[in-house]
Length: 485
Ligand SMILES: Cc1cc2nc3c(=O)[nH]c(=O)nc-3n(C[C@H](O)[C@H](O)[C@H](O)COP(=O)(O)OP(=O)(O)OC[C@H]3O[C@@H](n4cnc5c(N)ncnc54)[C@H](O)[C@@H]3O)c2cc1C
Image 1 (cartoon, rainbow, N blue to C red):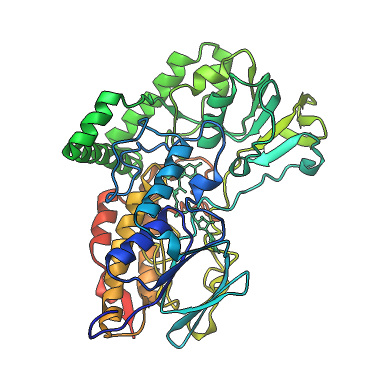
Image 2: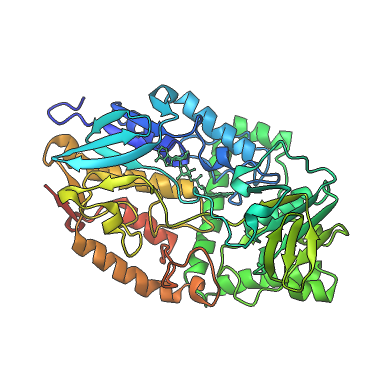
């Protein structure tokens, strides 16, 4: 209850990293009238859904943690997925938010009518709220490849985000389609277990060498005893990642050249066979696609039971994958590490904004949002990690925290009762989008590669400026960019 103001009711959609964050922050601000809707049965989002062998974060763990919940306990510089899942479960539990989460409730529609969002779930549950926070994720809807015969495969086949743990891997012939971070992590983890590993590569990837040492007991003891040490470590990591973030938005920067040099040296020094080295050499600039980090991928792919298949896939057959050269790669297990539908966001949820405008209409060309947070015509509806935000080699936790701080400021006049609704203006949206499209021209993402950053026009659907600029934009909303009614 807000004194002399308006008590707001919230629906948070999704209990991944961003939904858990929203619940904790709302509660911390005394805004306790909220329900989190989560279609699955646990918190964690990405880290609940992805359980493939070798999964780890590729942003250092001490940076990939909430700023308000640092932990001295991370096992590795880049900790494994189950540990990250455990972290989100623990933080949610410690902040006592599970009781406000309705698990097993997929939100199917949100309809705005006269100052209220009418939220409905698949089970028919209804909720009327003042504010919706959509924390439904970006890398959430698995994308399956368009390969002929996929359904005919008689072995086990699954997307990397739907790992079937009942399938035996030891001694099996395993094929992996895709060469992104997920595939690279899997190759390293699986090659020592399987009889044969075939990696089907359409596009070679630059690999940034990065060790992943465990934290020693002494280090953890020091972190526990001295939280200042942890804070310093995080500050140092932030600086390193800022440098990287600045490099990728300026394809000609010295930092970018340094990164490219490191990737090239990694390939030259660590792949012995010249033919394999050339097959693994990308024909585009490093970091044009999301940069992959790995301490041991080149080592793994050079194992005698590993094969890099560069011939294009013709079709999938009951016994394996047939490549264009006519060869059948016999397989027991086929893993589709083919990424996600990154333009889906909260869809297929049906969202109807002011004046009956649907999200399908608003996004008929492609998804867009002012500052990746607010859609004109959809008042009091805010997204975390929405369209065109900073995705890439960043900590999306920091992104979501900054966005949430911005949303809280937008809510202030609602809470005080000065207005009933707030959303970005169409003019602000158009100007922002025009500036964004102009700025992407300088980035490394347009230097000649196909990547999931690119939209249907080939324009990166990302934040094209420095991370410092993102921080500064998130510091306070421009009042003129919003309409308050
Ligand atoms: C393999 C992999 C590795 C990654 N590694 C990193 C990394 O190292 N660093 C980094 O910063 N990021 C990484 N990411 C990105 C990662 O997705 C984000 O860091 C973060 O976990 C996203 O959190 P989120 O809450 O925004 O979305 P998600 O984690 O996707 O959570 C969204 C939640 O919303 C729920 N939901 C969706 N729609 C509905 C609905 N209609 N009704 C109810 N519930 C719904 C989903 O079930 C899910 O629980 C990685 C992603 C993947 C897939």
